[in-house]
Length: 317
Image (cartoon, rainbow, N blue to C red):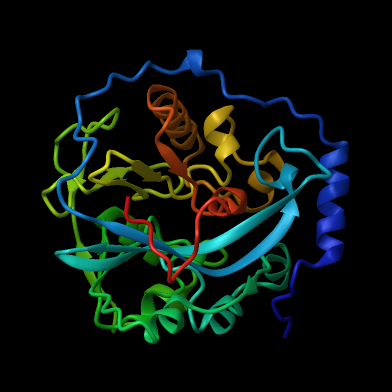
C-alpha cells in the first residue's frame, strides 16, 4: 500500500519539465466575451460586531505554473489549508475545515498517483487547536465538499453542516480524488440543507444573509463544484473581506484574470464545469475592480494569508 508523501520530488520534477515544454495558448481570460455584470446597491458594513480568525491546518509547495495559467515555472507557491473561524453574537462557526484529525486515513482512499500529486504537510486539525480555547462550534459552512475543505467535518459531530442540496447529492455521487467517502458518508454528520434567496447582492443575483444584519453574506459560486459558495464578511468599520473558495487557487486568478493551470486541469480536472468557473472568475475580477479595498481571499493562497495573523489572534475591525 502506498502512503501520502510530502511534496514528492519526482512528481514535482515531472511537473516542471511539462511546464517548460508547455507553451500557454490560454493566458488571461478575455473578459470581452462575457456579459458585463450589473451591481446592486448592497450593505457594505454591519452594525453587529463580528470577528474572524484563520486556523492553519497544513500546507504544500509547488511551482507557481501549477497553480494558474501564466504562473512562473521557477517561482515557488505555497498552498495552505485553512479553516476560517467566524465569531458572531448569534453563534460561532467555521467556513471550511481544512485538514481534519483523520486526514491520513481519509486520504488513503486515493490511488498512489493521486496521493503523490496531491500530497500535503499537515500541522494541527482545527478541532485540536480549538479544544483548548473553549470554542463551541455549532455550525460549519463548507465552501464546497472537496477533500481538503471537508476533512474536518467529522471532527465536529454536534455541528450543523450547511450545504446546498445539489452540492451534497453531487458529492455523494463522486469518487476520489475530488471527494473522499470517509469525509461525507458518516451518518453522524448533521447536514442542514439551505437555499439562496432571490435577493441580489453586489454582482450576484442571489444571496443569503445568515444573521439578518449584513455582517455575513453567502453568495453562490457554482462552477468549481455545483454548489460552491463564497462568503462576504462586513465589519462595522466598513472593512470588507470576501472568501472566494476555490474559484481560483491564487489571487492572480482574480486580478489577471486567469484560470487554474493547464497541466493540472488535464491531470485532475479540478473544476466541475470549466465554463461556469471562467464566468465566475470574470465576475470576481469585476468585483475587485469596483471595490479595490475589498480583501478577496482565495482558499489556498499562502501569500495572501501571510498578511494576516493566525488563530488564536482575531481580526475584529
